[in-house]
Amino acid sequence: MALFLSLILLTSCGMLGSSNSPVVPAESQEQGERKIERYTGEKSRIISSVYTARKELSLTFNGMGDAATMERLLNELDKYGIKATFFLPGMRVAEEPDIAKSIIERGHEIENNTLNHLDLTKLDYEQIYKEIQLANEVIERETGVSPKYIRTKSGDYSDDIRLAAAQLGMEGVVSYSINPKDRDMKGAKEIGEYVARYMSRGGVITLNTDINPEIVPAVGFIAEAAEEIGYRLITLDELVKNGGERKPLEEISGFDAAQLNPDYEGTPYELIYKADTKKKEIALTFDDWATDKTVTRILDILAEHDIQVTFFLRAQGVEQNPNLARAMIEEGHDVANHSYAHQVVTTLTPEQLQEDVVKAHRVITEAIQEQPLMLYRPPTGVIDHKSAEIIAAAGYPRIAMYDVTTLDWNDSNSAEDIVNGVMKQTQNGSVILLHILDGIHTAEALPTVLEQLKEKGYTFVKMKDLIE
Image 1 (cartoon, rainbow, N blue to C red):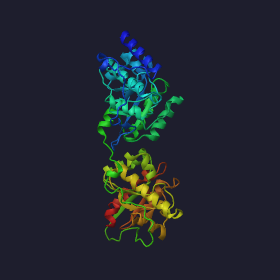
Image 2: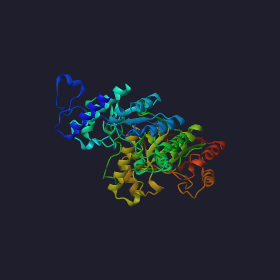
Image 3: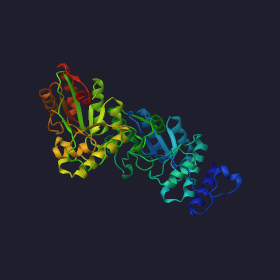
Image 4: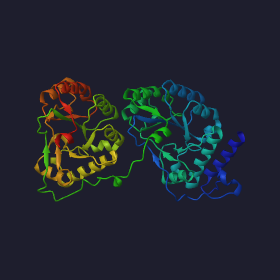
């Protein structure tokens, strides 16, 4: 073991001392020294999050703390039944292989954090290659595990890192989507609250084991946040295996259904407030965007009542968390366009308005991996003849309004206010407007709204079915 560690140190020091120093991959030792040529094939994929609508995400750790810290951390993970992914520096595995073996024995995943826990973005190609390769060799020698993924010290990456990873057969270069910046020596509760705020389906949380001891008690706060929303914390490899590949926008049918069209004057349009029907059918619709915690709570309530609705989404939010929009589709709901930046349409120039409509359409299309419902709802409900023509000319001739609103977006309106407002206004063919926003009382009011409307004999249908 000591001899192996010495060889690694010599190779590493020689490599880092000069960018022109020869590197000798293990598989080529018998053939003599050779220079590592930059790979010209396809770059390894970047994994900052995983495409999935499942209620799961991954907790990952960088570095390797001392034995006492790592034991406390593993005990805490066991306490909450969490399986995590540890990105370990090869040198630390060589120094204390028993820690790495204990991580595996407890059911966690080990991956490559480079040999010396370096920022690979500052190294040349040959150095990058050797840092990844030697770390792989050490981890496999000491634990019997062959790493699939590589993450740099900072989580940053470059084309050279992606090429070297591909050349070495790695399945991905891992970054993160949730970074509570424990390096800033935040407390456990603060770390947990940050993760809770940004927790998302398919998310990758990153923490460091060798900097801030508060990450150990932070595990409890993270576990409680996941349990509250109903999300599982699983290893990165399981998350990747459960996920899918997102198709490029141009490969999705209907991505170009919305287009810039300056010739808007005279374009026919329809403003739809409600359906003219004698049937006791109504459509429930939700506008805007929120965190996973709020949206998942609403989705769960709708699922409990077996009701499908239409979500009009602010695409600027969708862009930051596309998996949440896809979850709406997979639970049987419709998704439609509520603008990109949520600006009042009558305040925009024709060019600005159409650009916003088209951008929103494409962001939503890419997120849900299919063409959204071709209904447009203007932010704040404000619209005039000219702006309606402009929107219609861009590909959205049907503009979805509503006849029932309770101003639930205002957090001063209580759950009781929302329930009373809906019940007072709803009639046959009504289109009910509610919102998905954090900090309001809509989710609190929703179960009562659904129960009382059902008691009155109303049947819920999606808006497209109501108006068609």
